[in-house]
Amino acid sequence: MKHRETYTYDKGFEDVLFVIPSQNKNNKDASLILTPLNGKPLLHYAIDMAGKLAPSNHVCVSTNDISVIKAAVKYGQDIPFKLPGEIYNKGVTDIDELILHAIDHYARKRLHFGKTILLSPYSAFYPVEELKKAMKLLDEQTDMVLAVSSEKTELGTPYVENKNGFLNKHLNKDLGEEKNIFWDNNVFSIVKTTSIRQAPRSFFRKIRKYELDDNQPFIVHDKEDIARLELLVQQNKISE
Image (cartoon, rainbow, N blue to C red; front, side, top):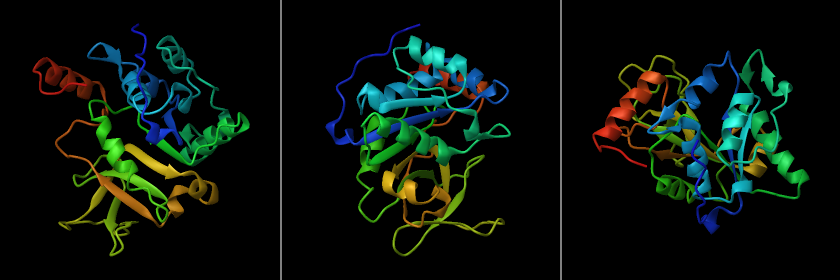
């Protein structure tokens, strides 16, 4: 397995902890994120994305899956802990607790972060510049910056933008032909540490959107998506 590259990180991200979550759910999660895409497992794209912006010890793959831990370590990424079982409830990860667990772990090592980027291990082939632009939206008034798309996503939450430029969850399940709906696409979110310590993300009222291009193949849902991306790489339509 290829060893991870060493990048010159962006000093604008020195205050940022990258958290890449992975849970062991009947081995489906590990099976997908460890599937090779253009010669390396999907998980490694997330590790490389974070490594282009932050030092290696500011990148945390948070998992209880031994196969994921071994793959990350073999790639050269230190794994600071195995995620404890209490973070899970019947196989479902409490992402807020996962974030806080990582923040607290590093705080005990006297590493304190003002922001946490939750980075999906299912994403590949989107420019690092997207995260740089999104980071600029996290001002003093904002709790979180959320990557969204205008196209409906399979598991995404619908939002509308209020007059102050913040996102509110859309309360009407029957969206019909309604326009100006933004969908959480689960690519990334940038969370202010003080905000997540005060309340779960579902209570945030000051969320800024960062809209990603709907035409880009950001999220992998299954191995058919990986095969589709492999074909696009071979056709030179996408690259890292």
